[in-house]
Length: 637
Image (cartoon, rainbow, N blue to C red; front, side):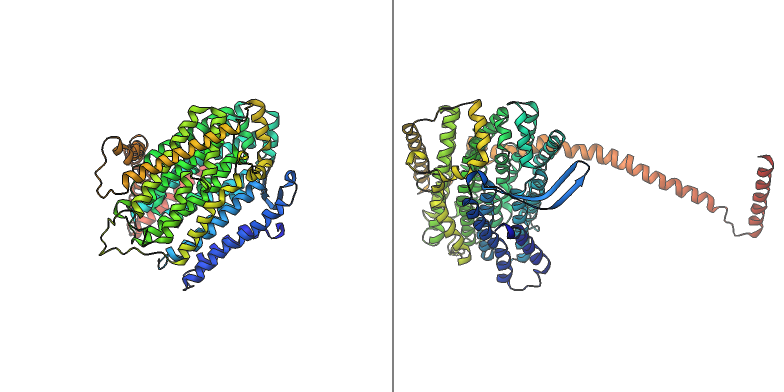
């Protein structure tokens, strides 16, 4: 399939061009939706066939480089437009196109009758095109092209309903905050090219062989790349943009939060895993940031009432778990959780969109209740997604989250593992608080005005497919303790083999016994069950809700992080801009210089106008005087 692999990225681009240029002329929404959906589904089919082609190869040879053309050449700098197809990239291709095509199908029903229907699908296709370039690129510059592409598309899609001010503000916030991380990525590329004379990822990783563990240069590059990952994957302190991204249509939230943009940072670190294996300090920082992000975001989610905001902070927390895995050197586990998260978080976001659709755009879970009987498909699928993210067996999130907890214990000990378990327990609590308040109890809405109903098939079919994946998706990573092959680990092993060897040589760790592993699994399950039990017990019969006080108020206001940013960053910049840059530098210096020159020229013109009297004797006198002046000049030079 490599001969036709170019269609994987070309078709989404064509879909973008067709709907972007001709969408308004295509009056039928189903045609627009079908074009856009097929432009992503066909690449999924090609990707699946390529996956089986790789699977048939020997593990050590599962790598195909497709070099399309020389992209940029300047002196010694040369970059090709080339794709690297290997177990890691093809896994991401299947997630992006598979989940992406389901989101496209869902959007046909969700965006029905929206004035910007065709434009929305054009942006979705462009988003997929950018993300596919990011995960397939064989060099960092092409990765960065996709990196910036998903950032631009997120701006378009978050602010899609631009007539509402808050959506525009959310889009600008996401775009600007991501520029901070992108700056780190750019500087890292400068360091890499300067010291390794290449931006090809494989050559860069080969060049690392001459460096010692803990080298300062490698640490610098690793931290700069991690800064980029912190922005894209919404880690502390650059996580504040992602919850506000809920301002866009719900399918956008599913696309950004589940299958594409936010996983880019995880992918970048996994792809350069050897760099981080050689930079233990950077790995420790990644673990700390990931753990803090997981815990802080989970606590915030406990007191949110907007169904999409809860899921947004849940995404930030789950990304924190992925970075915990990366920080412990369990790179395949991070990708495992990335995959299962795509299943259950895509399901949960699309499920929330179905609830909002059925509730006539209501998003506050305190104003819902009793939807279980009125939206049966949405309820069952949403429950499956919630069980998966809570880590209840046999659902997918159980296997990936348990693997993260186990790796934390193995690498860093019981204390830090307990902190990870606390975050997992809070996940179960806030998810089932949401399930209970949304689907159980008495209706807390005006039944004369709001008439909840099940969503159309274009929306429920993706929910069912994702529910199935959320149920069985974890079986690709069943622990050896259960007596099965850990298929995903074996599949990704060639990608992380060198990094794993470095980690084992620097910090050898004995594998805990199966008894210990089973005890940890049991502890994780009990923790999640306690979280679920407490949530159901506290909210199953609750109809009245008091205003938050004390620490609950702090959580409700998200630790006042946005307010702190305003005080520390935004307000000083605004005051400096207004007080000096605008009123002094712009108005007095720049405008003063321009306006002063204009006044000077105007005054000269005004003075010279006096010569133009209209009297011929005056002109004759001036002409004679000019001739005399020229003669005198010629005589005396």
